[in-house]
Image (cartoon, rainbow, N blue to C red; front, side, top):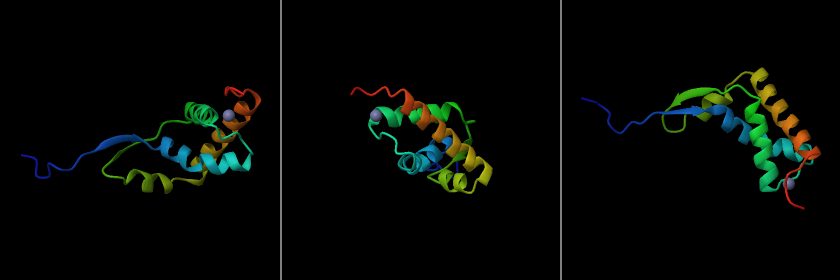
Length: 96
Ligand SMILES: [Zn+2]
């Protein structure tokens, strides 16, 4: 018998949350286009260039854990986003 049937666990890639967390700050710093196509391209680029960081989470504790991550990991995430911004800036795929 499960003593706590309400409890559900998810496997979550916290890299996604962290990219979203820093994305707009980085885009503002780099004066990036913020249309939905460019945002999606930058997210995809950053996530393809970062190791996935899967954690088992129950109801929203994953992000708190992700934020406790090392400074180096944070720097890697910001660097991946910045590279994505530069690439999208050179080759924007939005319709003008
Ligand atoms: Zn754009």
